Image 1 (cartoon, rainbow, N blue to C red):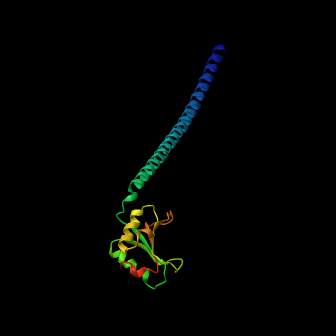
Image 2 (cartoon, rainbow, N blue to C red):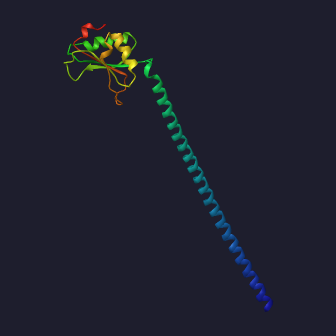
Length: 174
């Protein structure tokens, strides 16, 4: 009977070992799958962080490069000068006439219309981006005195120069 007890104990022990190893295999499989998934997520997050860091670096580097280019080209007129022509004296069709003239000279007239008031005595040229050379080129084309050039930088305007036609329009070139 003692022999039977040992055999029975060994069989029980073998069954326990099988249960333990099968449970361990299931746990190992599940944890290894979880670990793999977590490693993939960590890798993706590291790639995203590296990409964002690189884009911030490039943005900062390009901003300083653009500032250098803008500072260098303050005295050189642009290749394409974008102009706005506004009628400041109330004469009908005046802005259209000067728009046609400036376009014939190769300037990009992006807006034409009326100024907020019609009592402007002298034609004004307004530099909108801080490059006075553009305003001087337009003033020379129209025959406007350089003393009539002013600078009003406005980040909301997407143009280089505004021309406000005054009552002295008949003395101008077109």
